[in-house]
Image (cartoon, rainbow, N blue to C red; front, side, top):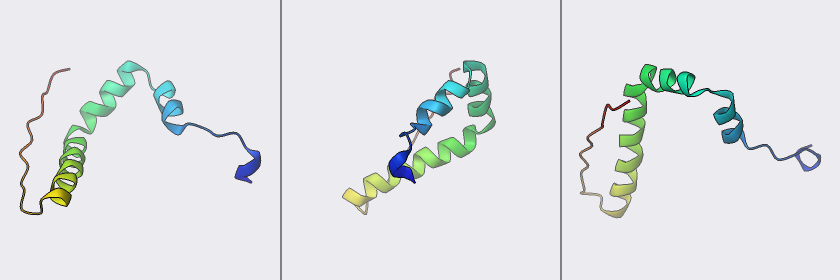
Amino acid sequence: MSFITEDIDTNELANNAMSDKTLIKYIDTNRDWLQEQATDYYQKILTSIDPEASLSMTFSNKK
């Protein structure tokens, strides 16, 4: 049925659904998980280029 339905940008829907206050609360609540995911993402990119490479991440806690 997708051929007869409108393409929906789910990222745009999510961005429009969250106010800045709600987004900040979500980030604060999930900060550790988000940082783990970011570290894992970039580590995989780096090791796909050089399997012996290591990555050190420093996160800013600015709000």
